[in-house]
Length: 177
Image 1 (cartoon, rainbow, N blue to C red):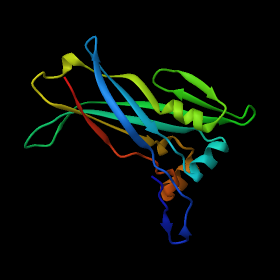
Image 2 (cartoon, one colour):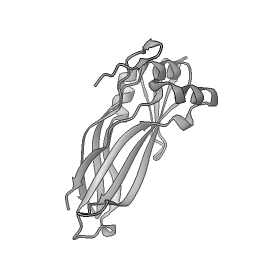
Image 3 (cartoon, rainbow, N blue to C red):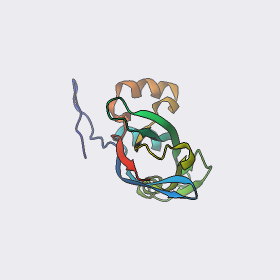
């Protein structure tokens, strides 16, 4: 989905938010794992910052909630999977770093780097023993560009610029026990 942002100064560059395209969970050896496909597209502002040496931190936020019929859902667990994306101008390569696992990879194109970050495979979510077998649970997932990790002056600019407000909608699915 492509959005055009209208500002008092006219139309800004097109920005494409992140999108969780699909997600599912499965139980293996007493642990629930999630697999997801996320589409990451950077705005012109975020891309310019990346190519200027700014490291972008993207956070995958995950919540497990028990569904309650006549009350707000109760959050059972939450976790964050964090990635760094950087551009190395000397080698003209894009480097991704999973801050949770330490896994690092290098790519010749931005498309390849973003595709790699967007393939989440067998991410441990929650131990099955922590769940009530009689309750119904939902998993919610979204991806967000973490503006708090931007350098100070850019963080102030990002506060006012829609080009740095990149986040997906919550993608929700039922945890099938």
